[in-house]
Amino acid sequence: TALQLNTPTADLADLVKPDGPFHTLPTALDKPLLFIAGGIPVHRDGRLIGAIGIGGGTPEQDHSFATTALEELSR
Image (tube, rainbow, N blue to C red; front, side, top):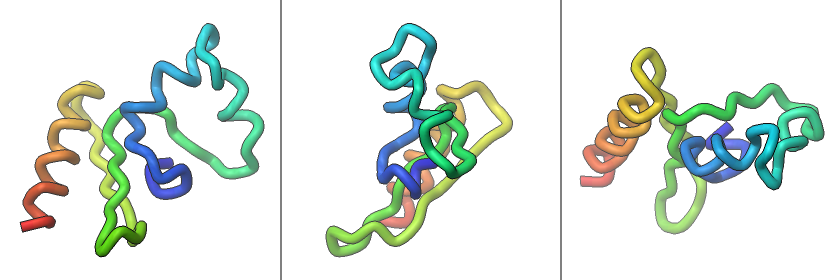
């Protein structure tokens, strides 16, 4: 999801809830996407080159681990 939409999934989770402004997004797309925190897009030289996805903890933990991993990759 982070790769396909070039956005951290944590930024999307509230937007696709039933009362969110993009609540129809998960069904409007023909791609299987997961709207839960833990996905972070990866950029190099301003270009999207991939994404990191972490799961298994709480959404906050998954996002934190993904962010830390990206920071380590950027060193």
